Image (spheres, rainbow, N blue to C red):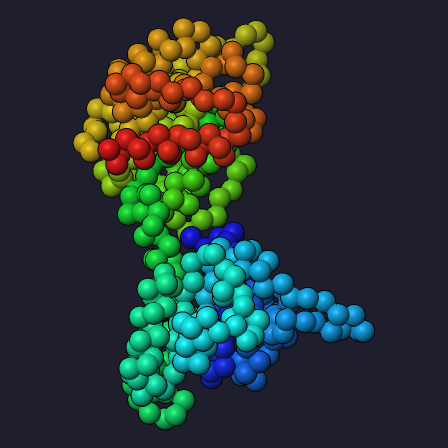
Amino acid sequence: MLSGKNILLGITGGIAAYKTTFLVRLLIKAGANVKVVLTSSASSFVSPLTLATLSKNPALTDFVNEEDGSISWNNHVDMGLWADLMIIAPATANTLSKMAHGTCDNLLLATYLSAKCPVYFAPAMDLDMYKHPSTKATFEKLISFGNTMIPAESGELASGLHGEGRMAEPESIMKFLEEDLAKGLSLSGKSVLITAGPTHEAIDPVRFLGNRSTGKMGFELAKRAADLGAKVFLVAGPTDLQVQHNNIELVPVTSAQQMYEACHEHYSKVDVAISAAAVADYRPKTVFKEKMKKKEGDLVIELERNPDILLSLGEKKKNQFLVGFALESENELENAKGKLQRKNLDAIVLNSLKDAGAGFGGNTNKISFIDKNLNIKTFDLKTKLEVASDIWEEIISRINA
Ligand code: C5P
């Protein structure tokens, strides 16, 4: 959820500031780009050097940098616009009140006012300050501006008193952010099954029948779904591709039979299934236990049919939205429509071998999306990343209709 996001962390002057070193670590581990802005009192509690080292970016406190005789400007507007998300943690009563009233007497506040992104604040103060009507009014005002409060937790406070006011722990802040960001996503709460890549059908321990599929289209579909908040089961045949996303469970398989079994294991749990794999239609009838020796004359390998995974998913379909792929070289539309109906699909993605840049291997694809009512939408040649996004847009508009 936070991977690749630009996150601006604003730290204000409370003892909980020391915990932000852990928060920066967790954000970086989640794949975010992090920049830190501190108030000058925050820098008494936590060292800008530590934060700069952990975030891999300068940690800023002043509008102006004076170093080695040169002066530069820390541009709050650029930083505010850079951010996809701003978190103010710990947020003291003083800074929160200034945010509510538009006061702009330090770099953090100027950056807050410049930011157009969602802003989260995690208050930290003593229990009576937290309960004070003016503090409550500040929270309400900031929430009415569209900011999101990460509520303080209860426990022992720096004053020695017990009660509400401790800044949420870094792990709780991370959980809060991830859950909150997921809420707004169009596939949040949905599960998805995607097949990708080729299958390898063993001839003997060292040889197999395979095809040239790289798995790129299926992997891009999986990444896009995961970015849109879905839980993804990615059943992938042998491929060099790698994927790291908290929402993606990679299920590696080799043969069509294994892919069939993995798909049926997960199918009943999912809302959408997309079959983007190039499944071998046939496998050697006999798999030799030892490496085959060459002999005089020709060799004939007898093949038998593999299960049609997509057809079997169509037969078992309950509420799933089922999508297949058709890679065609002639009578493209007619063949694709035939598959759509025969396999009981909700939609089929057609790519023609006649279109340059479509199909296996490359980074681009050119598709037509055909739904079960035979509405056809044809797209331009695009990168597989863009194609994945188009396909999901078509699916989402239909599952939400
Ligand atoms: O019938 P055809 O193989 O052209 O259909 C292509 C679609 O069926 C693709 O979505 C592919 O992933 C799927 N398929 C399958 N199992 C097979 C063959 C194809 O799931 N054995």
